[in-house]
Image (cartoon, rainbow, N blue to C red; front, top):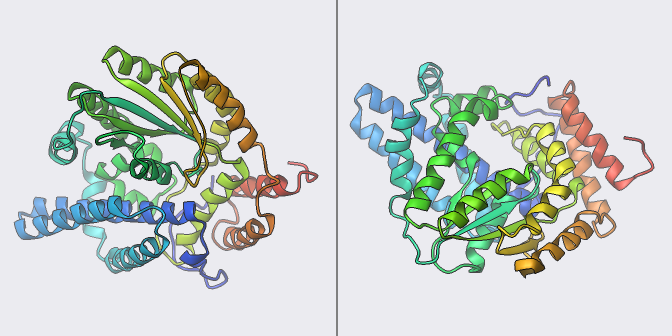
Length: 382
């Protein structure tokens, strides 16, 4: 992979307005940019602590808490609020970009103290979550770009489960890595790999804490491997928890568009943006049919639900009835005829121009674009 970085705005690519984005992609760019800004505040907080500046440390901490709290309170279907909040946060990110070098240097030099970061930064954010008499582990799955994070927050608002559900999302935990902010700015391609080990350990600790304290959880993942979901489901059953698996039914052509659109949209206005490796999407799509079938038919799953990217329930079954959901999921992800091709191809035109302007040597992105064209025009060889 070449030429994946976060640079200046390119004059040849018109801004792709936030109002032009689909609901799912709008929520993704809002959520990711707010999380990046929270990571920047955490980097400032750590710099101030190292300098002994208690006022600045407290200021950065309160700003970060406010950002994350506001992010999680925004209705994922409220486009006006999403656009307004993202614009405010984007302005803040741009304003702080020129001041980033001191805390970037701290992040570059800092060792990853997994224990200290867990105890000081992560654990305090979940200690107040209430337990349940009937704790449940909810698994939400789908390929990258399917809209899982938005779906999680819609599920929280839908009231499918009584009481509190603690979201567990590895991408959210990456912000606690000491080099996260610098990597987002300078090496977005390398960021997922560099933060993966620490993020995985913090996921494990979060799940262990939730199990020990009977806290219901909602776990977001790609479901690339059935064993990842079913092993955790087995652990849940051993600990007296119920299990609910929810899969998004989204045609791969739409998730490919979403991956590129959420990356290039912020690049087009000179903002840092997160790249999703093409292999992460294609490997998941390749495995997902068999994975969904195994999960839907597993006795470890008490309830199995299929939803679309707007949260509409397409199938809901319990016990042995869950296995029938696989057919509904397959039918939905295989249908391209119901997609508004003209509207999507307008998005592809923007992506083609953005690819030429920002990443003309990026073979991964080119492959996704070719597959997108094939999705709408199958006669073109892949």
